[in-house]
Amino acid sequence: MDAKIVAELGREIYLAEQKAVPFEPLSQRHPDLDPSAAYAVQEEYVRLRTEHGARLVGRKIGCTSRAIQDLFGIDTPDYGHLFDDMVVPAGGTIATSELIAPMVEPEIAFVLGHDLHGPNVTAEDVLAATVRVLPALEIIDSRIRDWRIVFADTVADNGSSSRCVFGPEIPYTSDFDLVAEWVHLRRDGNEFDAGSGADVLGHPATAVAWLANAIAEYGGALRAGDYILSGSMTRAAPVLPGETYVAEFATLGSVSCLFT
Image 1: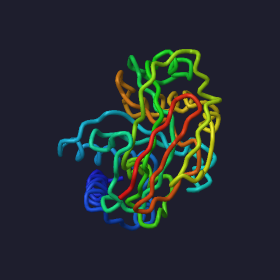
Image 2: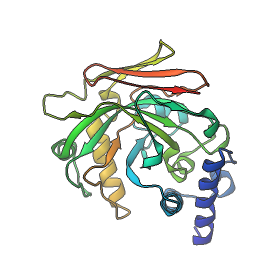
Image 3: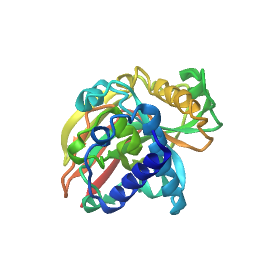
């Protein structure tokens, strides 16, 4: 794809996010938007975010569970970037007026103690590099009108990311069984869905390994201190103002947020 068009699309996504105004699917307007071009658009968006003062704090992985793949009709994981101004304090509030069509996903987040460079990173490598794990909520949102996305749309749109809420950080040891870790996602006290770490590519660390290898194709690496959202363990719950969401994990604790 022409570099000028890549720059224009990156800016379109950046402005749509800032104004909370959606646009028509990029894939319909640009049939040549293949995955490589879509990630180039994402990088232009990232450049604009950092140019305007945002600080990169980690990465998110999307479409790692069957529930999310079925919801959006996408069968391949993707990734996006996390910035400091996306992080909401545990129990904090999120203004729906700043978003377009948000949904909530419960996830296990990893914090790395040393860098991971692909290719050939394994789940075992990820666990060896992990110093902390924590319960998290990712609030996904799409700048594409009505979530009419295909793979290239969500990739270009920074993995449809918008906010994240991190719970208490727990030192990671081999005693944790992240595959068996269960979570219950509750909306205003009522259970919306439940799932386990096994629903995330079989093991959340497998998702993080996929990420390390995927970004290596574009010259990237996972950094020590990065927060890595490994992917939703349940269906994504649509949001309305006034709703409270709580993810209750079996051993990792809980994390919540309120939408106003």
